Structure formats: structure tokens, C-alpha cells
Image: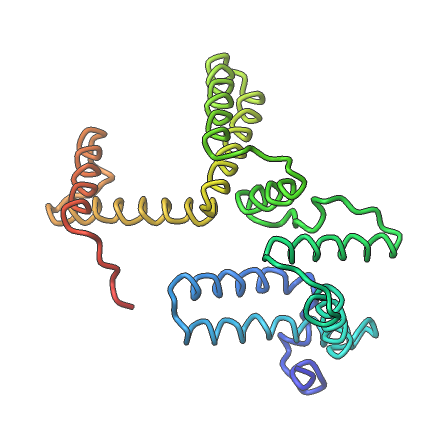
Amino acid sequence: MSQLRGPGGCPWDREQTPDSLKPYLIEEAYELLEAIDAVDPAAMREELGDLLFQTVFHAEIATERGEFTMADLLGGLIDKMVSRHPHVFAGARVGTPDEALAQWEAIKGREKARDGRPRSLLDGVPRALPALTRAQRLQSKASRVSFDWPHARAAWDKVEEETREAALALAAGDARQFGEELGDVLFSLVNVARLSAIDAEDALQQANEKFRRRFGEMEADFVARGRSVRDASPDELEHAWETAKERERVAPLREPSS
């Protein structure tokens, strides 16, 4: 990395800044998620390397600016892991994963307090996260102080309440209020997913893929008849959609080989 950024190095690498690299950092993280979902160790190895390269890139820029080095970064990480795992490194005892997590959060809170930074229980959930993931993380953190629904059924009752309020706003033609109520419906649905041990972001991604797959089946059916979905009537599209759904029920989908 030092050579890439140095005299005679790569012109593109030399002009990058932490700000210009942000899109690549996000892209590499999502490519790694795809490899994990595909259970593809070779792809995981490659994507983890690409994500690590982004860390090295940022550390090299910071070194050039005299801010910190890769050694500083790794040393700080090691210190943090040791201090937040006293049950591994200092003789403390925890019996369950939940107890280990609670200990982690308590130590983290004390560290921030020593730094003079007031800390909310909800701190550490980045605004840049996808909205469903952020909602789930915020709810999970709040649940650690028992600010939570007792079970998914109770959370579903809240979904129905919020849905009724959204319907009233829609009927009233109040776009601003409807937008707010719709947000409450989505937030409540995340609660139900979380309490059902379902990752809301993953569930929506699966729904996205199902829609994409079935729409592709519709398009293929029309092409086979020498037509296009662009020329089809709403009734024809609905029939083709139901046909694609029925085809999946009769013959379980096989993912195409890559």
C-alpha cells in the first residue's frame, strides 16, 4: 500500500482520501455479505481480503497524515478486546452469551465515561446502516434494559394498531402524517421479526429476490409467446404472476449454477 501511494505509484490510489473511499468500503462489505449468504468459502476469502485492503488503505492515509499507524490501530484493537473480555483474560466469570454481552456493554459504558463522553445505551448504532438493520439494532439495545414487548404476538398487536392509524392518515389524504405512520408500521414489523428470531433485513432481501425471480418468470413467459410485459394488460400480468407463483409451488426452485 505504501508503494501504491508513494512516488511512482498508482495515480488513482495516490489521489484517494477517506471520503472518496467510503463507497468502496460499503461495497466490499456488501460483497462479503453476499459471499456469506452463498456459503462460498472461496468468495469469502477473496471478499475478506478486499475488505481488509480497505482497512490498510485508510491506515496508510492516516500514517501519511501523522494521525495513526496500522500498528496503533491493531494495538488499540487488542487492548479493547482484552479489557472487554475479563472472563477470558482476567479471571472474571460469565455463564452465558447474554451475560458476556451485558458485561461488554457495561465495560464499554465505563470506558466512555472515563473519556468524559456521556453515553446513551443506543450509541454505537450507525445512522448509515440500512433502515431495517438499524431499527433491529436499536430495538435490541433497548431490550437489554427490558424496554421491549414480552413476545412477538404482543408486538404484532402493535403492528395492527399502527396499521389502522396509517390507514386513517391515508384515507384523510395527509401525506406527511401517512409517511410518519407508515414508518411506525415498519418499525413495529421489525419488532415482530426480532422477537421471532428473524433478521428483518434478510427477510426483506429474500422477498426482493422472490419478486425479482417471479417477475423474470413472467417476462420469460411473454417472450416465449413473442410478446413483452410492456404490452400486456393488467389482467394478463396478474395471470402471468399467479402462474409463476404456482410453478414454484409445484416444482421447488433450483438456483441456477454460477
